Image (cartoon, rainbow, N blue to C red; front, side):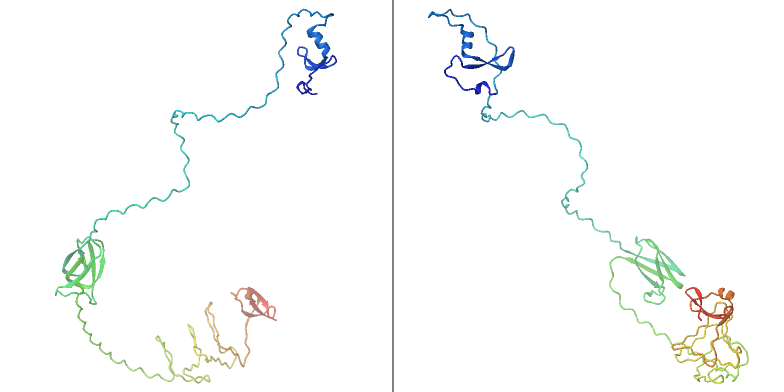
Length: 353
């Protein structure tokens, strides 16, 4: 519904012109309408007859206060005010809390100035002469040089320096006041100790005398000529045979032995073409044996080991004795219980046939 201010303006009203009115006492929110003729009679009274003007009516009652008007349009923005005068200085604030320690290292400080020159170093120097009147192989030298190591020169009673001789003593620097001279024989004399600036190089010593040649030993006695056959006895020294006669049979060679040979050691042949022959007319009458329970007989050759004119027999043993052996990989036996050749491989006895 349009508001009153939005209604069209009326310049000339007739009796039938309707005018909107509001009853502010009973229903201020309800708008009513009244004709111009009714409104005129209400305020001015009825028009009398004739042409005489009626009496002025009594003053009407004071009208009710009108309703609050509509909100006006915003005003124009005022101009910027002048800057006020400076205020008074505020009070000092209280001290803040101590902050947490920083984890960021501070900048490197400036290089310090060069320090003052230190005082001169103390140089220890001096000398001491020890006199040893009693001939002995050990001299204890007590000095007051204040340093452990120093120069030492030994002089005999003939005022001759022993420096450079073969019998110069061993020097033990015990501490800053004591040292020991150890000779291989009893001797008396002097020990000159010094500590300080390097002295001038001494003159070259005399060349020692050449010792006389030792006496030629007398010629040893010529050994006895051995007999063709040595019958018994014990040889305690090394026996070297330089005869190079080759052996082609049991009766030829540099050494011929008719019986057995007992060797409590190792038999070596260093020649690449060496041959060791064992010829036996009967089985078991000739053998290489060892009585040691831990001994091993090694047969080694650059090319091959050749067994000719007779078979090669391996150890015959039953299963029980076989299992008691300290077997190693590569061992071969003949099992008399199973009648089979067996070899020891990868920790187990396996059949070879």
